[in-house]
Amino acid sequence: MFYLPRIFVNLAMVPPGSVAERERLIGMSQRLLRFTTLLAVPAVGLGLWLLFGYGFWQSGGWVHAKLALVALVLAYHYSCGRLLRQLMAETCLRSHRWFRWYNEVPVFLLMGIVVLAVVKPF
Image (tube, rainbow, N blue to C red; front, side, top):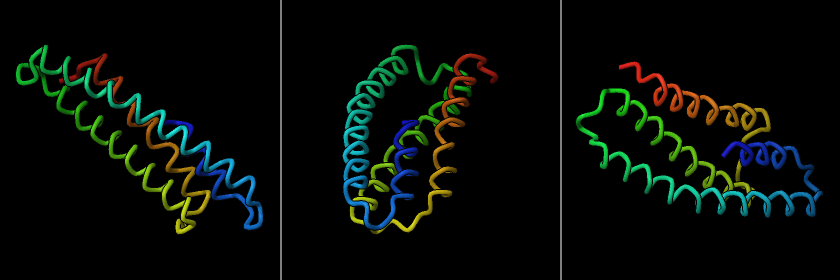
């Protein structure tokens, strides 16, 4: 989740004639996306099991906020897949600076999730 956008930064910086470097980074990105997707499926399943096991409707509002952030993390993961497909097809027009900012999004989302789960502010 944290390293895949960093590979996107490197892909955006690859010179046009460097085919071997580009293919290596694409391969790394594909394997990493596949790995994170395989781990996301049981994580979401176990999260739903815990959610319904402890009573979703009886919990405080912090659970709803946390679930909204988790949904944003899943949307971010999906957008990583879309960006990878664009990078593979060489149709992505994003700069390496945009990818550097994009790389910071999951840090803030996951920090918010952890704070909500630990502090339970409301």
